[in-house]
Image (cartoon, rainbow, N blue to C red; front, top):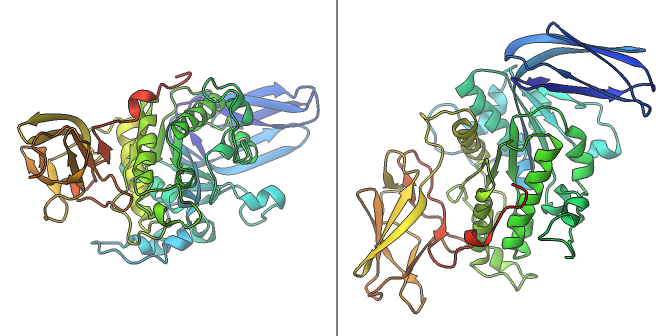
Length: 451
């Protein structure tokens, strides 16, 4: 396994009541006594990273030896099917036109013993899986069954840091956000108190998240939302993210633990025959709710509007790029890598002059660009009548100027405000611009609880 560097590391277990237990690792020896319920825990002092596999000895009435233990960076990845999406599935995706080693073939190359993976498998909750109970090196059969976004995140992190990386995947296909939050968190929330909460709160939190704490980690990765988008949620989803983040941070006693998440991809939600309440704007409105969660401290989000080949497939192919972008966000936000551009353009302000709206962005990197060299797409503009029409948008001095011959006095602009929108506004580092609207934005309505 991998232990988290530079933090106290909790080692815990069970024994007979009153039994004395000692833990030895890396020159440290910690002792304790099991309580009346037979539970015990010790904390190893913070350690520097180490790529040398060492032995941990846990001794009481019997002795347990854990071998090949490294010290480095540990992350927990969770969510629904797009996070669970396995390396086996990834190896069958259409081959991208890339130079060098093709990520589709990664299973043939993955042999780095300093990347370790731990799969929280739902099947183990019912019947023990004798093949993969615990940590593995990221290779062979263990890797084939592991999360592709989480693995590619670890691979990118290792390539930039050069130290051991461990990643834990605990995800369930089709899951809403509520099962990842305990019921008592909803009961104690000012926003949800007295409201009926469906989707089985705590169903996956109790067996698949809670037992992992307090194993020391660096932070969390989250890729979920499609199920709640189908329910046409908006502000309530932002508050649910707030609950989840606060509870998980509390479980790990780390109020500043970073939480990086994926804004969900383009998909034809409105064509779902059994969900007539969905429109072509349901997805952009839901993504706005995801973006509002960025008001919670120590969070960040990646955009994946460009990673879809089939708008009728809710599982976009390019999970290697999802993992890489999450890693870029972590490298910038958690490791201080100021030499990296970690985000695509993010709207900041609009200035109107005559019949034109000038948009200013942050995170422009080396400059704004049309990815395909064609005129900018997916911009809408409206006057005071709020009737949005397609707009002409051009890049000018690292801003975007938007106009339409039918709008003489613009009051609002929307970008990628339709479920199938795959806009071509990027920065030169090939990261896509975040969807936005300048009118009726959700973000000011959200005030984080307990943050």
